[in-house]
Structure formats: C-alpha cells, structure tokens
Length: 139
Image (tube, rainbow, N blue to C red; front, side):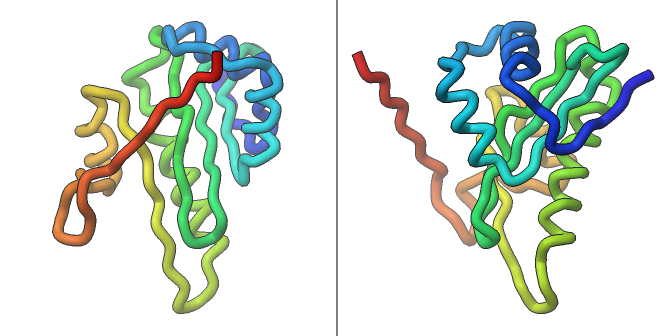
C-alpha cells in the first residue's frame, strides 16, 4: 500500500531517492540544514520504503518547490502529480483572505510539460524574465 507522509522526510529517505534517480548527493550536514529550512515535505512510501519525495521552502510570499523525485519504477503512476498538488494545497491553506504568493520551481530538463499540466507557466512570460541560477562549490 502506498502512503503519503507529511513532514516526516529524513536524511536517509532523501539519500535513497536521490541515488535512485541518479542525482548528485549532498553532505549529511547540508541535508539536515535543508530539512530544518523546509516548511512542508512529503515522503511517499510503500512497505515502509521511500519511493518519492518533495520539499517546499518559503517565507509566506515566495515558495520554492524542490527535490521532487519519484523512484523510476514508480513513475507514471500519478505520484509526482499528487506530491505537487499537496504542496499547492498546503500553500493555499496558509494564505489569508486577500493574500497572494508565488510558487516557483526549476523543472528538470524534459519535465516542463509535466509542471505545465499542473498549472505552472514557463518563464519568460508576460510577467517575468528568464529564471536564473548559480552553482557554487567550495574546494
């Protein structure tokens, strides 16, 4: 049975899922700090084993969806869709009347259509220029 757990994501779950999708790893210290700064997380499990995850970081005005990943053998089953929907619902529940906010993400290459199907729009658009990013590695 597949279950969706809120705010129980841990370092070992992250490592398992990141390894399964061939993402580069971070140190345990970085992962713990990331979890400490997460406002909402989801880990999806089957038989106690993590199969998918997603994290939401934010300040109430701007939110960033990150680390959304589904182990390959579980992809194309609606799990990623449900993770994103639950994150959007979390943000909506925390808005007061007349408040607004922005939810942003950086789609993995080739996954843009997936996010568009859930209501996200590509940048640039009429309101925003290109998204930007910078990677830093200390030697």
